[in-house]
Length: 264
Image (cartoon, rainbow, N blue to C red; front, side):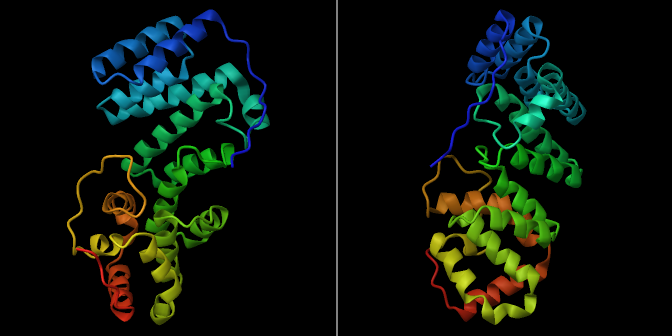
């Protein structure tokens, strides 16, 4: 059960409230041009509208523009609320609506940093999200964990696994991958980790080993234990598993050793 906190709120001006109202509607639009016009309208009303800059970044096709908008989103929030506010409320972000744009901007900025190869910067941005909001309402822990495992940073990955001990396909297969990376010679001693992961979703291993073709995308939400959930995990974690050929070879050996019968 989530614990909610009382966070001091700022008194908002009519312009700020109007800009937020425009953005609330804009996120729901399917037409990109309507989103674009709404974001620009919001900024004309409130030049420090963090969400408006984030939306413009999301809509931009140029990486340089995305980065510029996401940085403006973060700086606009920091300018409005100040570092003291951020420091004071670290650990309870997201529980107050006014903090959420900052988390959304960090999330979007981290994704684009990873995509352009600024991997350490992306990881630090996501670590900051978890520091601000340990409850992790945007589920960034899953992506961060797989980024760390793809870079073979098992020490940092272990911290995430310990902090979020979930019996989900995302964490159980990450635990299996972590165990393989920590000691590849323990192939015959990973029965517990392997079986727990497979029991959470039997469709994952065939995807990872290339026995089942992985779709390009998955429609959310997905049902727990379903093939769609397995595909969602593999699309997220594929880079971590395929960073070295040896890992998949070990996975195949483990699957043979424990003679799992996979669904078709």
